[in-house]
Image (cartoon, rainbow, N blue to C red):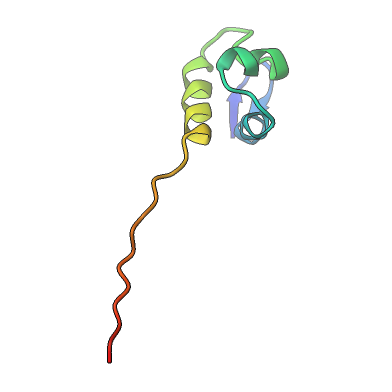
Length: 67
């Protein structure tokens, strides 16, 4: 899905940039041009970046042994 229409940046590109070290919207702007145009995408890019950088919580699974 396109996150930044002005520069044609997709969510996949933002995820890849995060995997390669982007840690802020400023980093995304430098490497991809995100939020360098109208700026409407900035909150969406920030939210996506946070989602990628914050690991998902671990889920505990109870192991039940039935005899």
